Image: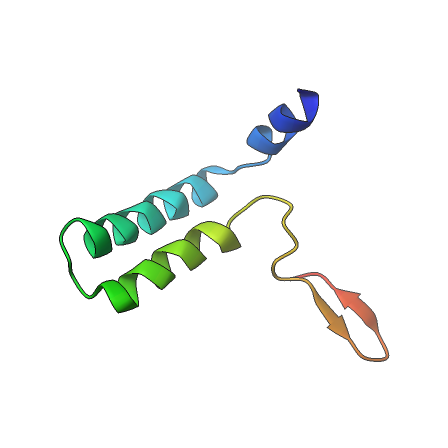
Length: 69
């Protein structure tokens, strides 16, 4: 249970705002049918990239090792 609480505590207010933006884009794509082929992946990506401690932006640079994004 402590692991889940650590994850929730790692979310900053900026990430919370981006979650709302992502959910708004998904809502517009599904409910309002505004360009669903464009807005649905954008909303999903906005949510995934802002997951705390996900390592989405980490890269393996050849010769250097892992680079934090």
